[in-house]
Length: 335
Image (tube, rainbow, N blue to C red; front, side, top):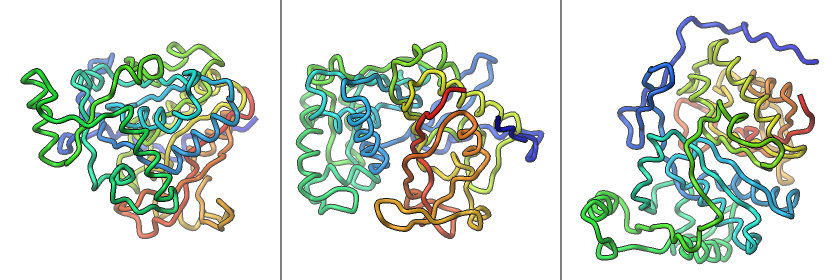
């Protein structure tokens, strides 16, 4: 048994979310009547490397299909992206995705209209002038776009019937050239959205019938860490450790837990640079970091890392962002 000393770093004050100054924040009232703000702005095809790996892993290890649960799904762009990548393998609708988030966040989806922003990392793949990258070739991107717009047809203001829809369209159109809306006929019986907090995952998901639990780029909400160079309290670490063990219990053997590549979720900062080591990723030697308290708790909870993704470009407060973090973890044993 691995024993973890979670009291090495012990602050008395827990850092709570504060995102009121950012577009996409939502005020949540918790069961203890304490209001917090969660940041729910995201994008289609975000963290494409991890997204593609998740797709490839599921079709290889769950060829007969499986349920996929994405917590902290925000307004749905990430679950829709995975649905689109799975399209050619899902003609029998054997891969079913459920997005979970707080009711206050899901309420923003009552008018499910989305913009395609050329400045969002990931969404540039969906533009006609995309020339390809290390993650996807120009021809692959073209095929992906065709699938995307099958599920997400382009809308214009005259396509909407209510004043509320037209106003929402106008707000989005200020900063984007393309506005889309899900085609319910295409998405029916493949994807749905329900209220749910990942801390209650053991009461929401039936054990062993979900091949992937996704909580991508959201762990910092539980850790109370919103910037690099901050560290979680022992209370927050205990909360995360309990969550990891719950995720282990609901996943089948070889099921995956996707946490993403945000430095805050891995408590990575420049101070951890000396603890990085080299590892071959896609036949190339890369510098990785996988020895934080978060990683040790995941190991102790029966997981091991199976995919690493580079820290997002443009991450502030870091001198060296050419670091790869373990974004996907596989369940290897029960705990």
